[in-house]
Length: 305
Ligand code: NAP
Image 1: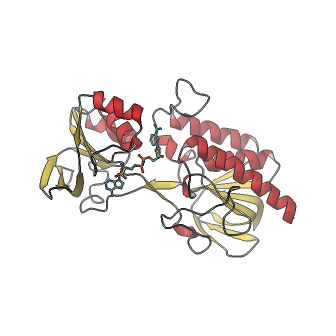
Image 2: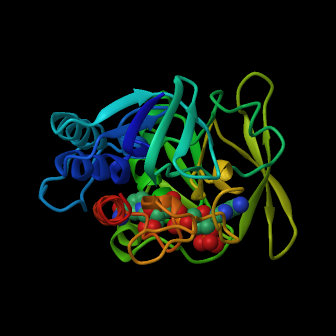
Image 3: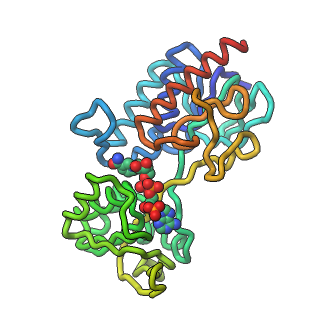
């Protein structure tokens, strides 16, 4: 079985940054990613708040550059799904592309879209129901669409969709947006946006394609149907921590508990980025976590090896 100093699970900004640091420090490092290198950011058209890019940068390009940089310093990468980690050291990491041994592990498996869990949502996913405005927004040129959620993602999506759609309804369960001030101002100034406050989606309706959403006003209990061709669910993210429940301490929201150097409850296992408790869930903070975890893994190997 091939042996590594560090195995990194997840190829988003946290994992790739950890890989840059561990490889550059001379540690034999493998990164396991099941999807695209770059992680969630590959879907972002323009990232405006990552330092160093005053005119913004596309998520795809930023992710590709991080990947290139890590590989340049000797990081080995494999496209595979991690399926298991043994409870004892040295850790054996099972993946769909084989098993590997590691002295330390950095978990940077990120998070995935939170679903509404209402009837019709799964069946119509890809048929009008979407979780990615950047990927699918252009399909709704001249049509009416809805965005569900009131956070930064929902408002960013709604503004992006207003470039394509004729009308964008923003359905939010409260009467105030969670999104930050700049986005709020832009949203209220965009005439194509219409806000449906205090409302939740009860059902995604349609046979082959989405035809509308059944809504309920949470204050009055009144139900209604909103006819839309597209529904973009932007209700946040859930940490991809299911595979670590038996191994590590996880909080009630499913985030891995770490200390200030990203150490988890298991010796030699670190966590970085969106998957860990108290993450700011920003690219810049994920990058910082990756550096901290890599530095701590290096120190751990020096002290125990
Ligand atoms: P978020 O901040 O967690 O917001 C999720 C939104 O969905 C909230 O408005 C929440 O309502 C609503 N929601 C959650 N579960 C729901 C349900 N079951 N039914 C209906 N509504 C539900 O998630 P996010 O907007 O994806 O942002 C994630 C992180 O990325 C945040 O830290 C955010 O700041 C960051 N981000 C930043 C930017 C940027 O431009 N700076 C862009 C995108 C994301 P409540 O408000 O009532 O809780």
